[in-house]
Every structure is written in structure tokens, then in C-alpha cells.
Image (tube, rainbow, N blue to C red; front, side, top):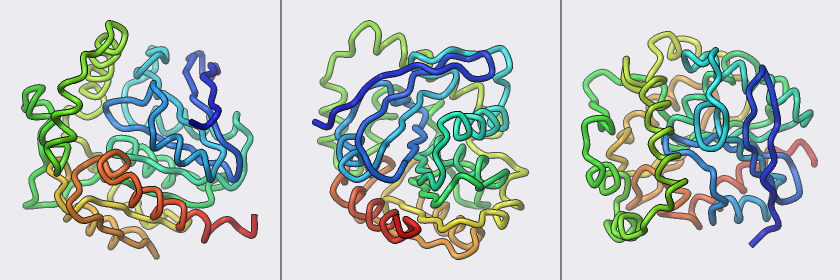
Length: 263
């Protein structure tokens, strides 16, 4: 396992936890609704290629829930401040699910510190006639089974008994997700028309069997973001970084290596 640390930093009066590890070109991973407060195998693998930052969003994990957190725009501006505070130029920004939506909100505002953008099963837009899965209506078991293509991953997750802290954090994460994404469900009606502003190389990575955001969402994003590319992973659900780890790492690191600006 790569050497890694858990650190705290304070921005806009909000203390957040940041997991850090690895060396190389900087990569910031924006997590999805489930959070990222524990060091995971995909983080370890990314850290073999990059200096990795995995912050817990305000309202998630061990980070504070600030009074100013009302919507995704607030998180986007927070992360623009975060990139300035970290002081890294040429950041590879990666976001999964709700974190992909957040990465889009950041990138349409400013990309001066971003070298590339990777969107993994990203929320943020609406495709007419293509219903999303509704994590708020599914029961706990349904949410897990519908996250994966291969049920063995769901069974393994459901078999694990969470610690008291993990259970408390899961509830906190769910409340924050509802606050950000309850209505409209997991998208910003104003975002889609501004995706043409994204002016950095963009990889869109999607599982072909995603039940949360079907592949049509990735295909639509590819049409809306200039010069973007779509890579589809077969027999994969909503979390390629867990279900198809080798494919995920190969796709992300090949893409970032191609766009390291000579670094």
C-alpha cells in the first residue's frame, strides 16, 4: 500500500479532511455520494502514478458541514479555492458520479489550474427520455445491487459490518447528497448549456451497464464537451474504480500521461 496521510485544511471557515499519497503529476479525485473517507485500492493504484489528493467535500465524511453550503455551485467555488490553496498547477481533475457533476461545475467556471478532466459515470445533466436510477427511492440493498454489474461486489459490500463511525458518516453523506441532488434529481438545468466552455482535454469513462446513470448520459456529455472522448467499460456498473479497477487505472493513467504537458 502506498504511503498516505490524512490531513485537515480550512477554507471559507470550513475544515475538511484530505487524504494524500503518491508522487508525480497532481491529481485531485472528487468522490461521489458515498464519500471517500477511507483509503481505497483505487487510490493506492492512482498514487503509483500521481500525487493524489482525495478531499472529503464539505458536508461529507469527517469534513465540516458549513452554513454556506446550499448547492453544487457553492461546492464548485469552494474547490476553485481549494485548487488555489493547494497551489498545484496542471492538476488532473477526476470526478465520479456526484463528484463528476462537481468537476463539471468547476470546469465551466475556470480551468486555469486544470490540465485534464476525467468524468467517471458523472451526474450533472438530464437526457430526455432516459430515466436515471433513483438512489433515494431504492432501499439500502437495492442501492448496492444496482451500483454493480457483478452481484458478487454487492454481496461483498453488504456482508461487511460497518463500524459505528462509518455508519454515522454514511447517514451524514446521504443527508448531504439529498440536500445537493434531491430536486431536480442529480442535475443542474443550467449546466448543460455551458459545457462548451470546458477547454481542457476531457475523458468520459462509463460502465456499459450503469443503472444509476445509463450510458446515454455519457454519450450525451461527449457530444456537449468539445474534443472529449468516451471510453466504455464492458460488464461494468456505476463504480468502475471498484468493479473494473485495472480497466479504470489503465484508462485514467494513459489519458493523464498523454496530457502531462511534457512533465
